[in-house]
Each structure stands twice: as structure tokens, then as C-alpha cells.
Image (cartoon, rainbow, N blue to C red; front, side, top):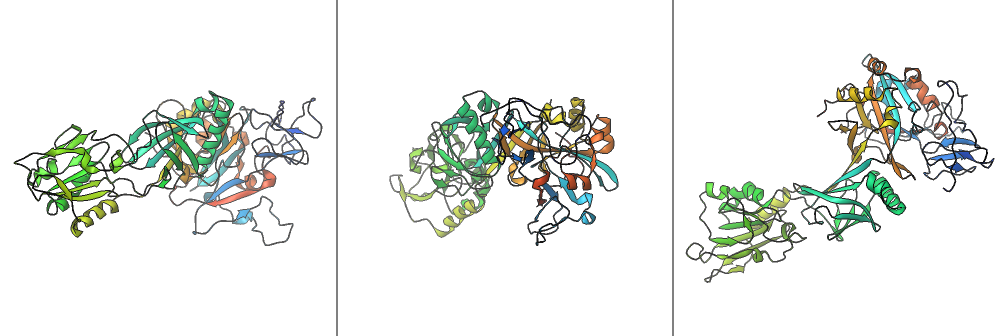
Length: 531
């Protein structure tokens, strides 16, 4: 991508003003005659015959601008098998065994047009590429379908691990460029905030490009290698266990050290005289803990390092790290300062374990009240095993967070604030590739969606740099009319399936069927009440 000019392929008036076929872009007089210009984003690539633009999403096919990727259609899942790709053409000119579309077999309640592959609305005064009329239980519905170009967007990444990944606010790098930061840890998980407008547009060209590519890769559920300043090297992928410093994580902790003491106190009581569950944040000590007291356990006289919070709960027993319980220790005895004479006794049985059960050790106090390693009894080993059994598998969760601004709203209505209000009033259901999206309270349309619930390869890019993401707004036809929607562009589902977008982007590439994920509600259903 090296050349830009400006044209606009929008018809003069209404969807019928453009002759049947594909988008016929206007030419700039300075552009070579064999090239056409794409105005699907601000880059305005000039594309030679047989080539694609910089985003690889639009191409010059015999002098006509075409959309390369298929539009993804959701069909209500009726079996567990993969649904085949179905071409737009109603006939099969090749005469082969390719799956065909039979309009008589389509039912509007069972088909949903997603924004994946639908094309964008740039320049933003255009109505959305697909404004689809259908029925649900006898009610006229409208779904406005588009892809949005997002600079104001980010990924929130939840990494289930007890390992210390890096200090809060530390920069996260990808291929040497800063692409985000470490944010507040949550219960059993480390959290990253990646992307965002400052990294996409506020830094160097390389930083923006790397950030964009990182976000697209993670959003499309592919692996990405990251490094945290002052912390760990990671490889993360949505729906998969993270790799921390070359080691595949297996377990998310059952709870903090105090929680683990409370959960398993009844089982510990008969098998050990003292139990210490090592944790970077809250280390638990059984006999001091309220659970041990309620069970009338004899005080052990243990003296712990760190800062005592409430009985049996200790903060800062060690520094953060990748050792026991997310600390930097390899020797658990290093967090014990000693034992109180006259309270502790020779033969005291001590279990030390981590919050995941991956680390554990058994000790018996000698005559000098020094812990000595000893073989762990089978019953104690079974309890440690149960700690591990109660740990969920370590996984990486990637949430896309984006603000739907003018580009999406102008494709719906001439008065964008009415769409915003209708969404907040739960009159409009917002989905991303058919996946349910959480709409944040407050101003604007800020949505968040789990990429694992979206169709494959839902995210694209444009080299501005920005992320391209699918959006759908579904509502009753009466509500669409009331918010000033582009009623003149509403088309029946069968017509959409036959002809593609109203400005004909993507028609030759067909559409791709995708069975609805079982966990996702049907997008045309009642919108959820917003928080």
C-alpha cells in the first residue's frame, strides 16, 4: 500500500440507484487507468487489477471493487456438525456437488446476518451495508449489520495463574513495542490491558502497526508472544492455557491461602497439627485462623514472617515470583521465623502447601523444634491432591472492548443519540458476530465481548492503523422507525441472501454459514437489561 486518492462509491439516491452488480468506484483523474480506488477506510488504496488492498479485504476484480471475505451467516444449531459454505448464487453452474442455497428452505427466524465480512460504512454518512428485515414470532424485526473501524478499542486479558507476571502498571511489549500494561490482579488471575488508542495512534508507526497486528491475532484466537517489563515472558491464546517463561500453566488456584485453609480445615484437622498455605497475597495459618479456632485446634506456636492481618492471615511473607504460591521462594521454611517454646512441641506435624497444591512438603518438629522433612502420609497427600482437584484449568480469556461511535450509529440513523438511548433502554440488542455483548453503563455505546463466543476470524484490520470488528443492532421495526432509522434501506432476508450488501460489496465471494454457538442466545431474542 503506497498510493492514496479519494473517491466515493455511494449511489446518488437509495439502494436502487446503483445498477445491479458490484460497487463501481469513481476514478481520480490522477489514478492509473487500470487501477480502482477503495474507500472502505480512510487509507483509500489504489488497487491494480487482480490485487488486493493493504487490508487484504478488498480487491480489484476486472475493474470492479469486490469484498474478498465471505459474509458470515448464523443458523440456529440443529446438530453438532459443521455447516457448509453456501455460495450467494442460487444455481450451480459447475454442476458439481457443492452445497446450494434454496430460498424456499430458509426461515427468517433461523438465519442471522452477522457483521463478519459485511463491509464498513466509511465514509460514515452511508447507511449500513445490511439492514435486514425479518420476523420473530410474528413481530417485524430489523437488524442493522456492519463492520466498524476502531481506533478506540482494547483487549482485556484474564490469565488464570498464580505466577507473578510483572508489577502492576508495568509495560507489556510485543516484538519490542509497548502494546499495553499490567493492570490489577483479580482472584486467581493476572490481568492485562492491551491495545487502546494511545498505542494504536499515539506512538510511532511501528508501535501502532504491532499493536494492531497483536490485537487482530489475539481477537482471532491465535497465539501471541509478549514480554512484561520487570516480569515474565508469555505466550497467550484465547481459550488456551498460558505459557509463562516457557512453562505451560495447568492450574488456577482454588483460592488465597486463607480461603484454602478455611475450605479444607475439617480435612486437615485430624491429619496435621499445623498447616501453612503459602500465597503471595494472603498466606493462611490453620491453628491461628478462625477455622482452626472453631475446630478447637491446639495452638502450634509458629512465628511467621510478613505482616499479620487478622488471626491466621499474613500479608507479604515473601516477594512476588514464580515459586510457591506466586512468591519468589523455593524453600517454604524460609517464611517461618521460628517456634514459640512451651507452645510448640517435638513431633508436631507440619504441612506446607501452595494454593494450587503443585508445591507441598511435610515436616515433623525435632527435639530442638526444628522442622525436619519426612515422608508425607498418604492421607495428607490425598488432601493436597484434593486442593489440586478443586483448581480449575488455567486458561486465557480475551475480551474485546470497543466504543461504537459515529461510524456505526450513522449507519443506523440520522440522529445517532436516539440509537444510544434505545440501547440504554434495552430496546436494541447489540451483538458482535452474533455473540452477546455487554454494554457498559454511562455515556456512549461501549461494548465488551468474549472473542471465544464470536465466529472464527471475526477481526480484521486497516492500516490506518485500526481494528475492524463486526457489530449488529437488532430491534423491532417500530423501534427502528421511531429512532429515525434508514427505513428505505430495509430489505427482506431473502433479498439480502441473494444480492449481498445494498452497495453490492462482497456479492461474488458468497457467504459462510456458521452454526450458532450453543452458549450464545439467539441474537434476535429479547435484549438483556443493561447494568
